[in-house]
Length: 393
Image (cartoon, rainbow, N blue to C red; front, side, top):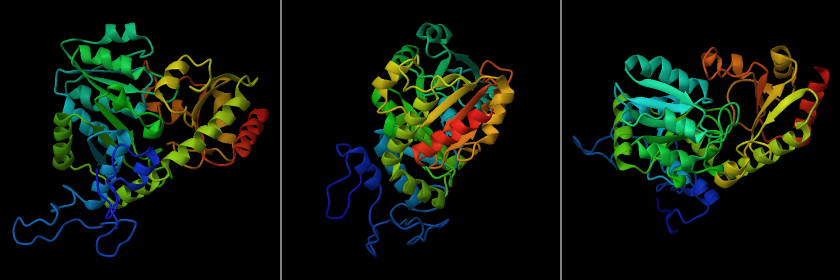
């Protein structure tokens, strides 16, 4: 909670968009600047040895611009504490250091982001962590994969990247807590506007703030949010002690993006629904993966735990990998690029782009799948771009 001069505190009782605009955003006390200043400094003047002004000493430990973003992130996810990092993977790495020790086991879904799997498999497994995956839509499979004496982290990603699988967060929380595991939810695809895992019992939420939170494809960042004080203290110490913090300009850009998150997510969702309506049943597609479709296996769960269904879609293209590659390389408005969640529409080929590191594993993405990040352009133009490109295949 923070106070605006002459105004009521920015509390959890206020609406999402109000918190997005005002949480952590205290007007400058000296000038009255409505937008808090960007603190581009690495160190802070001390009033005598140990005489810190408002607790600020050195920018790795704290910076007012980063603190403002962290207050904003906690307010949007309904958490007590939030920590901002230089990238999504830096946030994940710091959290896993805080939660795991050699001999521990982590269980994650079989459709997580390739970079997350690579981080655990290539960095933490050699350190002594064991990793396994399961189909998280099958609660019996999850129960069987949990190791009561060893599983310390249950890593959930919903909707998943890139096959848009939907996981019942509350049900997974119950299973994870039965064996004493910390339940972590990667909420990047949904954003806190569409889904708030902490309210469903999750212990920790992680984000690549590069995506929907920043929203403009111009800044890299990551976040950890929690209400568990012990986890918060561990993450906070490692943020300071290891130092993978977000810089002040990155934090400022992310804060600016967050202020329009609600309106952007509504437009992303509107446009994705228009694209899905135009492509469902298309003769050159084998499948459209989108939780908003009533035929999607996780549709009912998504309706229950999400506000809307978001802007991410994946397509299985008839004709195999050659046709999928041609689609990804031939659109005009959908730009061929990695990442997602920006105002512009992107198209990608996960098998050789975002998920190349999991080829040959249980997480391998089918070679006929392309992924769409539907932007906020005019929906008719986006639909026309895709239909015209499919007609040329």
